[in-house]
Amino acid sequence: MKNSKSVFFLGSVIFCSLILLLGSCNKSLKSGEKMDENEIKQLVEELNKNCPIKYHLLTATSYKCEGKNLVINYVVDEDKIVYSNLTDKTLYNIWRLCCIDEASETDKNVIKSLGLSGYGIKCQFNGSKSQKNMTFVVSNDKLKNNKPLTQEEIIENLVEIDRQAMPKVVDLVTQIVDFKVEKENILYVYEIDETDFDISIIENDSNYRENGTNKIANELRNNTLTGVLYKLVARSGRGICHRYIGKETGKVVNLQFSNAELRQIATANGVN
Image (tube, rainbow, N blue to C red):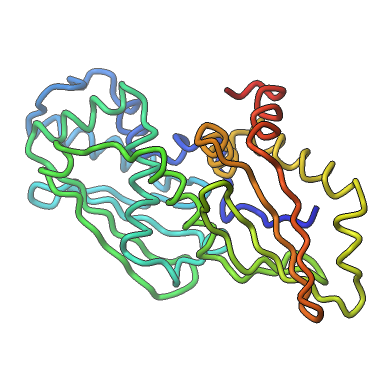
């Protein structure tokens, strides 16, 4: 099956977590309790000793205190995400998903400590290739009163991350042109150049479905960001539909994986 690659690959969502790093850098910090200025300074010093800290999407290059904000500078890997097209909202949701909502309880206690200490977080992003700079501040109030994203919000955010890279070439005859959440499915939409390819092959060749099954299994088993999405989609009662549209004839071929099939693949690969 001609499928799109994930915009970026994460061994686990929490591997991208700033909060994981904050929680593990110094076990002597009073996790979940208020920290004094000396403890905050010690935290920043230890973070900077480990810089640059590389993730699959971001590289943290420096940390500092700026008033009552912990400031983090990131470089965004533009080989893995179309950073120049990101909106403030999408970038914020990417950061929030990776660094807040998927954090462990221990890591959330560190966030609690920052909140109790009166601190916010200021994130500054620079592209690895472009000159685009983006900044947002998570205020102390937001940090203290953070409400986790719902399952539906996480699904929508993960789909939006992939959509940023579209349209995108998959192979010589296929490009992915859209990706969206529907009531019954998450829907991938592909455009097929029929000049040298018969789109009917997709619906008549069982290898396409087998390859699709293997792709889903690999994403789930390896806990990639796409795998996280598929797990949540399975829980939401949705399936996955790959819709191929012939550029010349307009012929539509749907390669459908029902919710029951998605759950079966997940269970077979140790994902509940």
